[in-house]
Amino acid sequence: MKLNKEQANRVITKHESLVIAATYNILFTNDIVCGLIIDSIGKVKKSPLYRQRTKQLINQCSKERAKYEKMLNRIIGDRDEFFANANDIFREDIDKHLNVFYYSIKQVFDKHKIKNSDVISLLEQTRTMCEFSCAQFDKRAAELKSVDNRFNGFALEYMRMTALHRILNEIMRSLDIPVDINLNTDNCINAINIISKRLVDGENIAKAISN
Image (cartoon, rainbow, N blue to C red; front, side):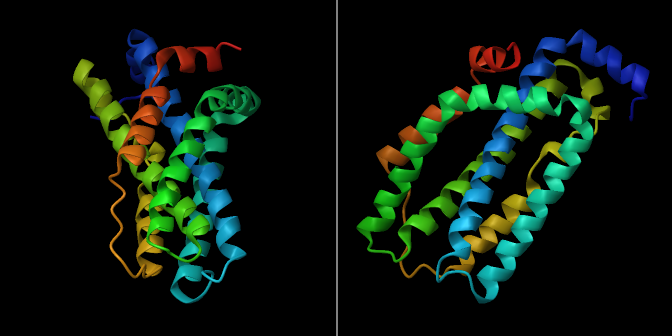
């Protein structure tokens, strides 16, 4: 059942701390994905990989990211400066772990002597983080609905990066990497586990939004 504005506000107020944690957790993670998309697209466009099907998909990805950010900016409204500052504070802790994750992925591609490994590794990191974002959204949405079934009446899907995840998967397939790459190495697993813990860390989120 869809709730009206007054009903929705009552539900949010009742579960305010959980709603704030879930919302900023998702938004901060999505912002990381958007940043990685911008970085990876910039690298692809300067590489030999920017051709044919990959080029088409890269352009689609860029448009879909812009569409997401336009929608988010419309919702955030005049709180955009607050969110930008909060996100910068949050990223101070996360960025070093993202770098470790990138080099853990690149190490695997380099081991297999894959050309343009720097670009492909960044694309794979972007794809993985987008997949993680979608999984995290599903978990957070399920948590909200489990504490109060009235959250079933909330339209939350706009925060899920479903379309971007699909396009990023297609981009990786379009690269036709000549060998099967197993990224389930200890370094990759440890890196993503650390990132996942930092992203949901309540103290990190509170620090970011309290400044």
